[in-house]
Length: 209
Image (cartoon, rainbow, N blue to C red; front, top):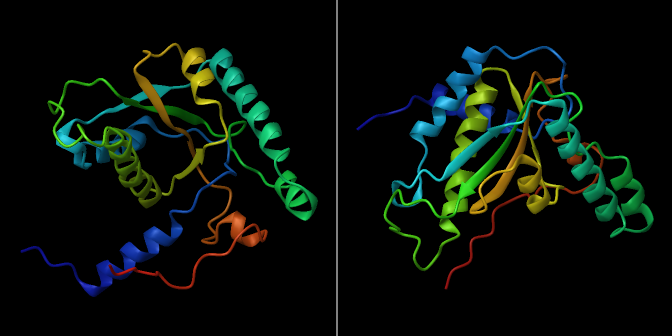
């Protein structure tokens, strides 16, 4: 059985702490070979029934990026309208995407009709396909951070509009819009904590039934 040293365990915990969502990027380009190395984590990721339902779209053209950013602006304005008082003021001051700066941007979809895996494990819980994509993305996130790269997950979007703008198959469901690049800073504390939006729980509550 493989054993990992205490030093490795400490480094792994440090990596998980440094995994934080990045929204402030330098404009420096990302070497494609380095990116390919990190994306190799997809081949190690778990997926329900070994379905590997993740589908990646590289968002590179000016037209595609403009459409994605306009989508974000509209969704963000709508979200702001749902807050009031101090919370609205704090929300308005948050930087919630790195879409203007990040050199690499990806839309990640779940193929809801994939035949791979023959439906194993998802007949009663079809959402397991999307959960599988999320699990894979977490491994890729850590792989990127281990190489010094940052990732920002943009969730303030109209997913159906983005799918139309990117002209993907109708049975693909958006799971994530990712901004990837070199972080401006190396702090470990997420900006939402720094700006007082929310605090982390001190301990994990495990319910017993």
